Length: 345
Image (cartoon, rainbow, N blue to C red; front, side):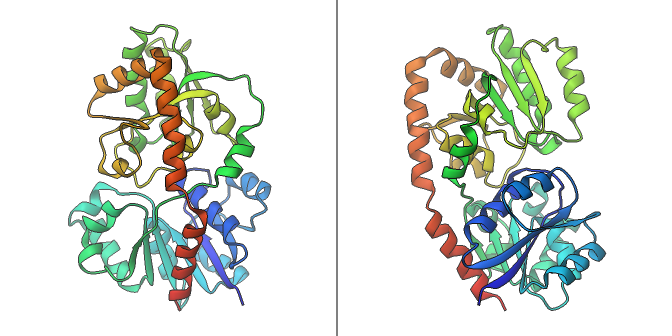
């Protein structure tokens, strides 16, 4: 008999963790019966389009999680990231909780009130999934919770992405930024890099896809730097893949990451990626498929080089696709998750 799993997420929109949860639900449907529960918002339309059972919450609270538990009656709660994990533990009574950590925040690297709180939560958590070895190796997870912590790298459904990317669009860009407009993704730094880039490439075209608390500041900075002709700030898109498909390069300026889904998706579409010098990025980005940059000038140089050299771009695009093929094995991914579910009771 398949076990019932309730995925708990803290946001009402679509980002990396949400994509991972949907990928798990869709690809493990033969092995487990799953539902998705989060605050109400734009995510609902996407879940319906992917035929995923959705249990909406008014907000992420212990009371609302308990209502979702009462409706779904799960055997396992699969909580994504820290806030959802902590509230699910309190709400879950005796239902085992699997914690899926998608980020590697700075506070997890030191002793502070947040890391102490998560440490205490880990005592009760049945299994901890992290998306990159760095999260396990450089935190207390490796020393104290080694046996219950497993590294399962994010994966994407390449076939589904290809189908969604095939939708026609007239939008074409040289550079794409895809992500939440929040401080951790540092979209303001991205805009400032583009400002310097435009001095050397006045006609370069940029798209920024995403929404968040910094959206107003991004709009103001684009106007202040007179970049309206270069940067299209198009907000959240249910299906960003056609625009990403028609963009040449993905650029990320994040301050911290786990294993970024958008980078993996871009590789699967043959897009070179230019990223900051974060340890977590090194498992997916190398000189064959992208560029790791230490400062703003290196970002500018990398974008110019890939934009002006057709041969360099074509070769790196081909290697990006090959890198994606090496990384993605859906059967292995499903087996790892199934082993996690079977190990908790």
